[in-house]
Image 1: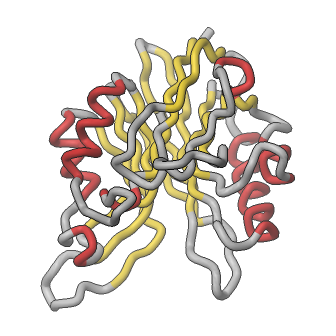
Image 2 (image 1 turned 45 degrees about the vertical axis):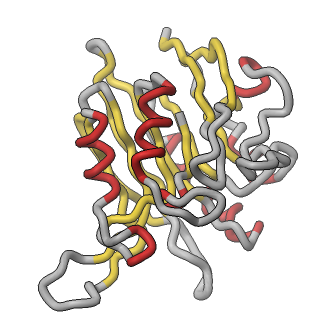
Length: 236
């Protein structure tokens, strides 16, 4: 599953991380890529380590990719971090976060890699969140992601909020190596944003050869400004 949790705030900007945990649990997903996850980041999330809190609440393995790493507001407090997380029922045997290219004014984005041991077989789960204001910047970020995807022969799943629609150059570039699972396994428009009145498909699950999409659906959940996308996959 991929889910942009908007630092635990709903469309009215009311913080309730427990609702996010409930949505993840009820989805039944084995592996979840979360975007916009705070760790002691700001008052907007009560300075909670959201990644650790969700992993503990749900009893899942955790990988975290820090894209913003700031000094604490008070000396001695934990560093303020913002980025992406992977939650998994399967063991995470290796993890790495790559900072993606950005302009001087763009927000730092990343690609979180988590190698999972799934019933005795290793696979790679990638999670990203691309720039929202510049298509040119998204294109360079996708080029960096493609280089990492091309460098691995493991069965690979890439999830995330691409801030780009299916007809965009960015998505076309991703699909040079990976398959968009929605046309193969979903029904309808697949819109994920915004959660109250979905009108855009900008959240994706892509799969490499050897990974087959069996069913895809957007969950009717409004605990964030995005809806989660859940895909059932079979690794051949």
